[in-house]
Amino acid sequence: MIMRVLGEGQFEVAEGDLNRLNQLDDDLLQAVEAGDEAGFKAALGNLLAAVREVGTPVPADSLEPSDLILPDAEASLEQVRELLRAEGDGLIPGIPD
Image (tube, rainbow, N blue to C red; front, side, top):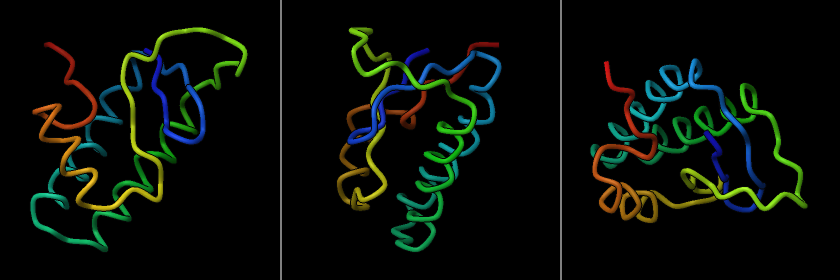
């Protein structure tokens, strides 16, 4: 799966890493729903750090389409809330059992 982090670039993430990213996405969703600004910033930072850690950067000259787009680290709680409304169930789709 190709994930774009706005302002940073794309990362190719293996399917085996999606469960971990989904857990971090759930933490982000909970913080946004609670309006917890500090929790939101921490959860967003943790999610983006994990994408950078497990993902392989896609070369900048590659024209690969992104499967999903994540906000940058400076995104506001309200901006992410709007993204979550558009996506429905978090920023990262769940993996079917």
